[in-house]
Image (cartoon, rainbow, N blue to C red; front, side, top):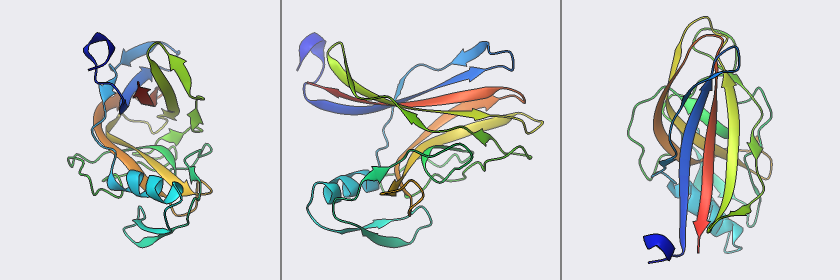
Length: 194
């Protein structure tokens, strides 16, 4: 055990959501919840990036293709796209190790059942107390005319470019209702502890 009873040498992923109304007031913030769902593709991409070999990895479409030896994992999606970065959906299926996509992704837009997808952002890794944190953040705005309930979140990453054959690297259940005119910011925190 490490300091303060924590396991030493751990890597963890946590997720939380902050809902803001049309006036910018925070109406709900979930606690940081430990993600239990780095999926198989995460370690397969790491394996390829460590220089071991080209490796066959399942796309979010269910097809398979080889991840090029040492190709960068890119999740830095611009506003208006849901093919990479933090993604949200309405599915309720319990995440599994072999998931290659979230169950029911929410499309980008202002139509019924759609959310406007902001740009994906990442903080540089930094020492925070006894940990090293890297945080990914993405804001989704509801201009659909009705409340949308997010029930699942995940992270998609492309090979070299954000839009190049995206793969799912994390999938979690997280229920957050977003009323019309409000927005929600989803944060994923990758943390290592020595």
